Amino acid sequence: MSEAITLRYTVPGDDFTRAGEASADVKRNLKRMGVDREAVRKAAIALYEGEINLAIHAGGGEITVTLTPDTIVMLLEDHGPGIPDISLAMSEGWSTAPDEVRSLGFGAGMGLPNMKKYSDRFDIQSTVGVGTTIRMEVDLA
Amino acid sequence: MKIREILDALGARLLTPDADLEVDVHAACGSDMMSDVLAYVKDQGVLLTGLNNPQVVRTADMMDMVCIVFVRGKVPGEGILELAAARDIAVLTTEKTMFSACGLLYEKGLRGGTSHV
Ligand SMILES: Nc1ncnc2c1ncn2[C@@H]1O[C@H](COP(=O)(O)OP(=O)(O)O)[C@@H](O)[C@H]1O
Ligand SMILES: [Mg+2]
Image 1: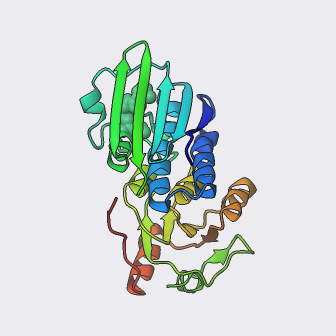
Image 2: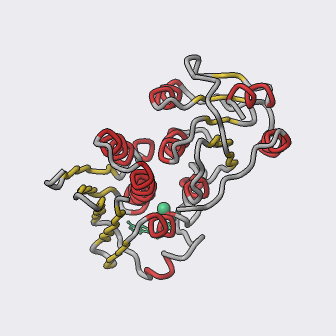
C-alpha cells in the first residue's frame, strides 16, 4: 500500500434516512482493504457523526476520505450556516437541533465531542454564512 | 450470553430469520439517543432501543454490534430489516418496556460496556 487511496461522497441535505450511507461505505471499503479493525471503527464512528451533522445542520456537504500508509484522513466540507461559537458547539450536550431531529435519535449534542474523542487529530474551521470544514485523522496501529 | 438467551429472557420475537442465534453478546446499551450509543465502544454488543428508523441499524453497524432489540412492541419496516440482515445484525422485538428489558438482561449477567477508545 504505497499510494494513497481516496473515497469521495456527496451527502444530501434533505434526506435524513440516507445519512450514514457514506460512512457505512467507507467502513466496508476500509475493512475490505484489511485496515486495522480498531482504527476503522474509530474512523467510521467519527465520520458517521460528521455525516449526520452535514445532513441536519448544513444542508448537505462533501466527504473526502484518504487512506495513507499510516493514517485515515477524513475531510468534511459544507457551505451551510457555519458555527458562531465553536467552543460552545464542541461542549458535550450543546445542540441547536430541532425536536424533529431529536425524535429521530440525534441532537443530543454529543456529535462533535464524539468526533474529537474518536480521532487522533481533530481540526474545525467555521465561518458564519460561509460554511464549516472539519478534518479528522485516525492513525493506523 | 448468546442471542438465543436474549430472545428467551425477553420473550422476544426474531425478525431476521437467518440470524445466527449462537453468536455471543458481551455488552448491552439501552438508549433512544444514537450519539449516546456512539459515545461508548462495546464489543459484540446488543442495542436496546425504542427508536424505529434506519439510523438505529447504521449506529449498530458503526459500533460492530451484533443484535438490536426493539422494545415496547416496535416492529421496524422491511427496509430496516434488510439493512440489518445485510450486516449480520440480528433484530428482535419485545413487548417489554426499555426499563424491564434492560433489567431482565442485567439480571442474567449482561453489563454495560466500558468506554475505551
Ligand atoms: N456542519 C455544521 N454546520 C453548522 N452547524 C453545525 C455543524 N455541525 C455542528 N453544528 C452545530 O453544533 C451543534 C453541536 O453539534 P453536535 O455536537 O454534533 O450535536 P448535535 O448534532 O446533536 O446538535 C449543533 O447543534 C449545531 O448547532
Ligand atoms: Mg451532531
